[in-house]
Image (cartoon, rainbow, N blue to C red; front, side, top):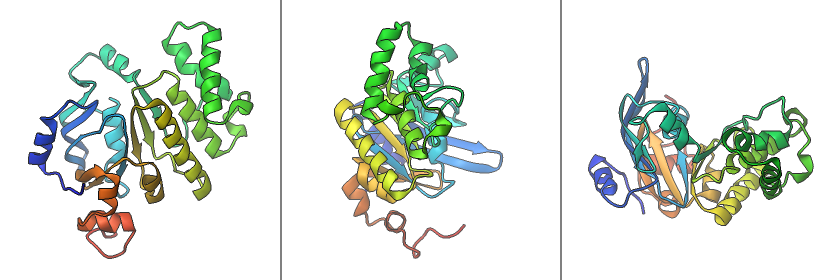
Length: 267
């Protein structure tokens, strides 16, 4: 499917079945910088959606709205059917427990080894005995190929290993939604491809709604079931991956091809 979704189409989309993540006409500015300009998007459930777009166009700001770290100036973000800013901070905190997030650098605690980093959410948010925590942690560490590195500190391992450890930690609470903020950032092409295949593999085994924020086109080609393209704070394309990479929209075609000619310039 190739589509530019104006507000009318977004309204029609929103009138359909309720999605886990729904962003409705969201605006966000920082001072005089207008980042999100009426962005609307219902993310496909139980699929991997990549969000693409030029640097500074609002991808990471969108992610922070979804997880409830930023409040929109206008509009609504609904997660699991709830307006995330229409509830108390305590209720919002409970909603966040259903998210797993992999940040750009893995966001590991430098004072903890990998095992304790991955165990942290379980110790913080559950009353599980250590025996159960160990079973879950080791299962996730095995899944990401780090079972032999559990005693290493974050500064003793490569960037790719830190990403995988962050991924394992994002999964331990069995989240319904997993968010990836430029997981390919700082990785060489081989490790980027390996991480992309790992994301695919884990999603195939566990399901869930995965949202991958990236500007890396090979990553998007590898992992995407669906692709959303953002430009100037709005969605200019949303649909299945084949539709995105065969789009006749001039901006989408230029950006996904990495072409010099087209509506996207140096400004």
